[in-house]
Length: 384
Image (cartoon, rainbow, N blue to C red; front, side, top):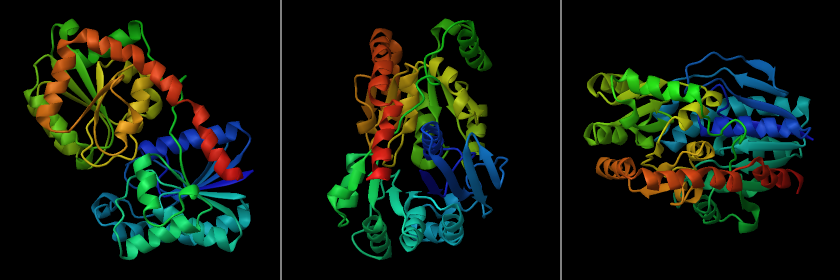
């Protein structure tokens, strides 16, 4: 079966959706599907890219576009839609015509609109996946277009009950909307140990000038450096929590320079910049607790899955779908304020036995809920 993946964002762009799409395309290739990805050049990550390539069995066509506008327009859904639509909309029919996929699998509303428009003209099965919680307005153009996209799709896949409910409330048949779950490579993401891990933790601690490495407690943030991810509130918490607790930040984004400046002023903050996803496992393993401090309603929170697979507990925001991605057998859900972050981090710092119990649960939780078996919902949507 030939599957066209239509998406505005794909690797080497960095993000949870991009990582999921890498997992999805590789899982499809492993199952003998033919996969073509139509996307844009990286729009939010400054990195090298190729317009056309075949990588790991996946054919990829990246449309040259206008980087640097995405974060500026993200607060205005209509302008963001108009910015992202033209390239996918005008190139998609040529790919569908000449590559002739059986299924067009779209990701997000922009790709969804292009997919349902051309997919229906060419008689293709169209699957639309949402990776976010949108808070659709009750009327207006955004409401009309969103409802049209979902109702014109053969199936809609979404990540959480909250997301499903908001789509159904638009007037979309509940039978059409199915909940699926991300997965992680449980071989790649696992707790590492031994001398190399000891040295990695030691290097992170020593970098900040701590002399007694055994007493240091490491908190890890991995993600985009944007305000809605809560990274600034996390840094405020780091300024006031116990002096033996260090914060390690991995990621890129508009706040990068601001965080570099903060690193010069805060003696327990280590900023490592971008690290490729396939190299993150040792960092999760070298960490006492991972934090996902989103102040917006997160679509799911892929970092949670990766951390738990490595046996590292998670402090997560109680907003969006994060409470569906984890529970308090593997971490703690909190309302994100600097004071609440400080209180929770210090609790785990002072109660290593409690943290140890959560760590023992973490990998079992990931094995049970986040294996590649989760692809079945997607494959069913392709076939039915």
